[in-house]
Length: 232
Image 1 (cartoon, rainbow, N blue to C red):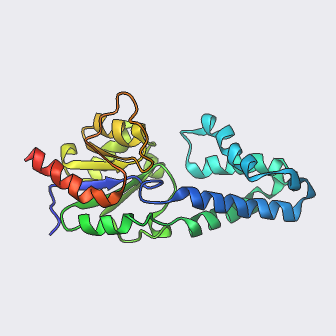
Image 2 (cartoon, rainbow, N blue to C red; image 1 turned 45 degrees about the vertical axis):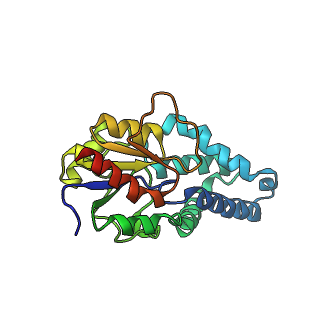
Image 3 (cartoon, one colour; image 1 turned 90 degrees about the vertical axis):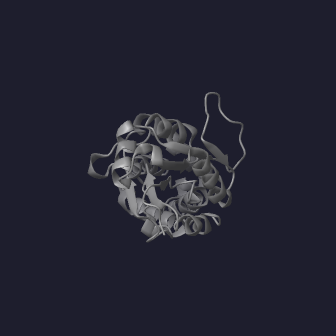
């Protein structure tokens, strides 16, 4: 049975969900449609569309992800004189992005292995809705930044909402994610334990001391069992 005294909460994009291939596929669909509609789009590349996200992100980083994406698409469409068609292209982008966003192969088996012993949660800055990305019904609770005025990670209010949703003391919650700042350091500052998912086996950044580090979610059940044993 699930232990009501412990919870494991997951980040979404690049933790449970393989977002990068979905974004590439969605931008490719946008570029194909741009080229179909405008001859000027022949000079526009996929790299240009990817760069447009970076060009607008800095000024809008605290905004909802959908707003940032629309700003990036507006910049891309302006390259081919298609500015007035933003709504159509945004609808195309998001339809393809959600159709292509699916869990990593290690995600669902890890959730199944953890569920008998832990309350499972889903907490994201992005707009990867669990039910639209192959994760429907997997979690006891879900939290999305900008719903109910919830600020994005690494805001302490985000993690306060995680603690409230879990209904447990912060020290009984483990947060799992791929971002050293948002998913590890911010979670630890809020009193949670944190597991860094380092799929690419990157060097650990200075000052980062996760409670555990894994390169695959397949290792997570054993790692959490060791953490629980050490705390007992």
